[in-house]
Length: 219
View 1 (cartoon, rainbow, N blue to C red):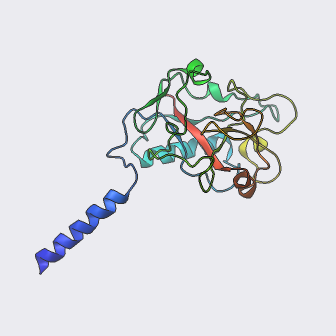
View 2 (view 1 turned 180 degrees about the horizontal axis):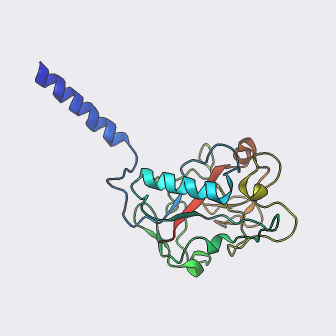
View 3 (view 1 turned 90 degrees about the vertical axis):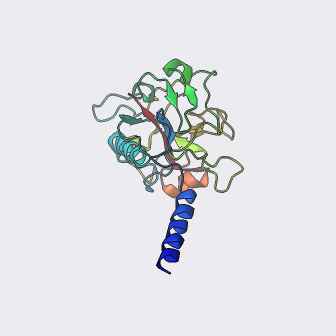
């Protein structure tokens, strides 16, 4: 009877482990790029760049990739005496690989060119799972970036970063489409498709987003 009980417990554990997403044991050691599986839940208020970077590290650590230096692909605009920050300048030199070990871009130039390998199928979250896109329910293809097509920050007075990633109310943020389809001025752009309706979680979700963003390892 005791032996039967032990076997039953072992069987339950095997089934439970099989149901888990990519774990630290089978995450590809080359992973240096992912879309966050979830944002902080406070709209585009990510706690600024520091908060966004910290979430990249936390999620990477959960799948065994916490030993690298992670940065969020986000730009900020000049404000309160602080210079603008370009997303492209925050992410190292590449190359970058997804959680399955597939190369998505060779270097910064390749990343921002038409030759990159950024598609819905390759832009995976940290667990190696595809992120919902247009046609899926719910649609989560709007990825926060605050950048222009070349990965640089916007100039001018318009809010394109939801108060440099501190607002969950008024404002707007430039987003890309990870599935390379949808509406906006540049619907097929992964990093600069259109501006969001607002900065709240509800407004981001209302136009096909969920407060998600890209993370890159710089080493």
